[in-house]
Image 1 (cartoon, rainbow, N blue to C red):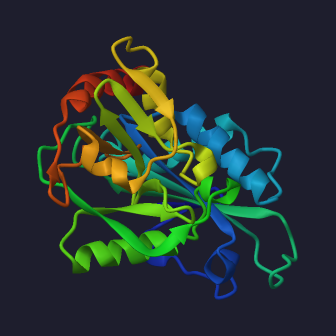
Image 2: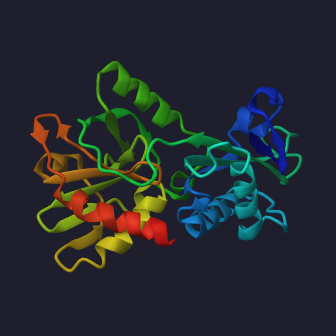
Length: 281
């Protein structure tokens, strides 16, 4: 079932208006959330990031769009599944109401909540190969708009097609200054010795929920130094370990970039800690 503005519909019954502003102008934001047994991982972080994104896009946030209201709508949608106690990827999509061209006729919003079952209840550290390359055809613009989860993801789409055509598992995206910003589907953490580095938000990387959680965990580990600094592509082959992180997959170790192969020692340390935080959140 899909929740559209508080009403539940079978997916087969859904239709999309041709003048939907998300479809026509990319006038939409979204959140992808992980749940287990009706529990929403890192819900407060997701909620406040979504509210921040809506404010940046100057959407009119309804008075009833509280954290408690949206949580209840997510849980109500989960209740419709016969496997409601399984692990799910929940997507909340918010778009501005139809009408207008570039200038909207209204700043009011509509929303949808959809579900996708996941295979594993908690985060795991996969041991499968993950070879990456740079995607250099187009660049992410550094700045505030690049940090939000809008549905303008053309660079990610084209990078994913490039990876598929060239048998890579993922790609690193660059900003206009030729700095590593993120991967196709998550933030990037680079390990060199005892220093762990991730790009700052000012470089244009997504303000990731898992990124925030891992930075907080890293700052509790005295044997490591966590820094938010720009990453040059030249640093990649000097690194000991590289990870892609997002709230659905958790921590994904990069195994190869060009001729360099990487370990995943830090990932083994972080995995139980992030599962603990997800369970306690």
